[in-house]
Each structure stands twice: as structure tokens, then as C-alpha cells.
Image (cartoon, rainbow, N blue to C red; front, side, top):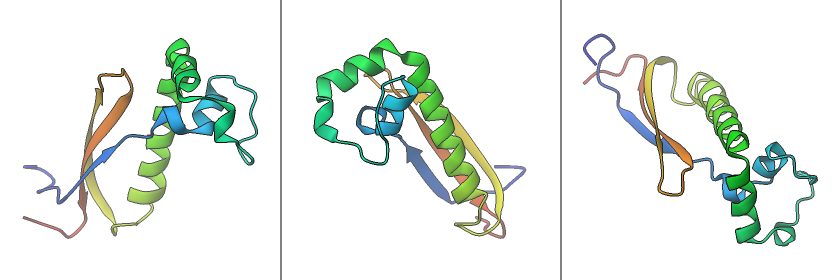
Length: 109
């Protein structure tokens, strides 16, 4: 904050891997992401798949968060981006989520 000023926008991003057909695809499940039937996998089956594939959860999380940062924040959704700070935490169900403080250019405290 001393170098870049006060971050005025605060986000928590949780991509929700248990509900995403894309996350199931990362876990090597054979699905059609364009025509996904949510009833094909029960919530307990989805949880089991994700728990058996922790690397798939992390890859899905990493790619989703990087896409959000690149397309939304760096892409100009809040104007030109001066700086952002992020920290990753794990929830009680062992899924990652991220907290971000974003400082658009020309915004000061």
C-alpha cells in the first residue's frame, strides 16, 4: 500500500469446482461441457471425484483465477490496473479460494 496506494476493490473468488463441468473434465471425466447434464453426477459423486484428483482441483482453480485476472482485471473491467495483491487459502473442504485487493489506476485513498 505504501508503494501503490490503497486498494479500493476487494474480491474473494471461489471457482466452485464441485459444481463445474469444466472441473470434472480436468479430473478426466468423459463429459460434454457444451451439453452437460447436472443430474449425471450426484453431489457426492462430484465430491468423490474431486477428492480423488486434488491436482485437477488445483489446475482448475489456477486456470480459472488466472483467466479472471487477465480478462477482467487486466482487461479493463475497472479501468487500467495499477496493482493487485492476492492470497490463496484453503476452505474446510480443502478447496482453494483467493482473496484479492485490486487498485485501479488513478484511485487513491
